[in-house]
Image 1 (cartoon, rainbow, N blue to C red):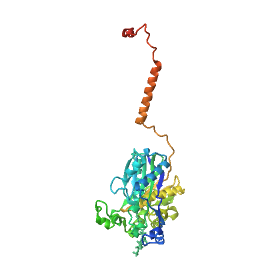
Image 2 (cartoon, rainbow, N blue to C red; image 1 turned 120 degrees about the vertical axis):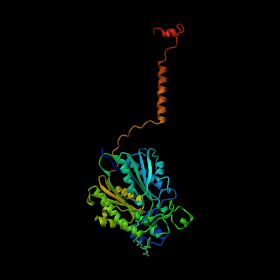
Image 3 (cartoon, protein in one colour; image 1 turned 30 degrees about the vertical axis):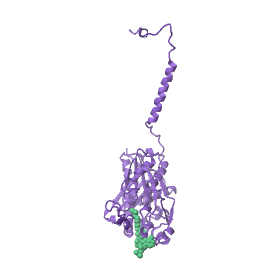
Image 4 (cartoon, rainbow, N blue to C red; image 1 turned 180 degrees about the vertical axis):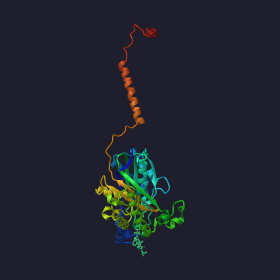
Length: 386
Ligand code: ACO
């Protein structure tokens, strides 16, 4: 029987604090007008000191599990895509999320494909489900980009924001869910967008800190050119794989980097802008969180309904790009939960009850007190037994 990976729950977590373009104009030489017209961004959310990619990711995941009607114990795999992990090398942010959720049966790992990370993670989770490795998976995109942005660099600091988004993927025999994916990379352009220091190539030192090498560095114009080509190409490729055209698709949910990049991709695809979901005006570029955040809002607004065909498409540092074609599902009908093996506490209680019953039964069956005139002897007891 073929198995499909359905998206059955979705959730988000957005920090409360809002940073507007006018706020930014107090920090660097820029203006609301420049940022809005060049990017489409009006404001972004910024995590507070006690919010991390892991805490935001866990919040979004709880939301998504509630919608899917699953408990954390049902989750067998957690894949976190992030460009700003809690720790630079290990442990994976997914492991922290696993602990916060209490997802005791789940494996957990991170995917690093920058802003395309959520698309890569969805594809991997789908493969794990379709091959029967797991039945239920969480895919999370989560970011604290505000911690790796240079707040003195107007070329980058106006673009990014913090947020998290999560999908629950579940196995089902009914066709639907993630139907095809197209993943690409051009590593020769890796220097267009990078965070130069803090890795093993340039470990943190007094010099790397002084040279501000622990922040995002970007060649904006070159990234722009790459993005428009890569987005249109990935959409076309994923549709071709499924034998479909743009006409068959209800919506495109693109990575929310820049309104003008999406307009250029729409032009190349000959699709009207109404069929693209846009929300970067309120969140900015939230990297791996931007696609699940846009999907969440489209579903809330009922622009995205069960049965719709949608393409999720992204690009990012690497330079990576990719798209997935999805038949949107929503929560599956509840199935009776399989009976769990009783835990130690329950086993001890059952045993105690059984012992008590036996003891009480013995009390009730107790023979009358022995009669003094006819003492019981082994011989007497054994009489008649040969
Ligand atoms: N405010 C005012 N002026 C600015 C600002 C700012 N915030 N930023 C740059 N400028 C200036 C530049 O210094 C330049 O001035 P100059 O001509 O005197 O040198 C001028 O504006 C024009 O700069 P451009 O780089 O040509 O501006 P452009 O129209 O290309 O817009 C932008 C810049 C918004 C960064 C655009 O190139 C872009 O969106 N690129 C893609 C970025 C992107 O998507 N990055 C995320 C990738 S996803 C990931 O993996 C993290």
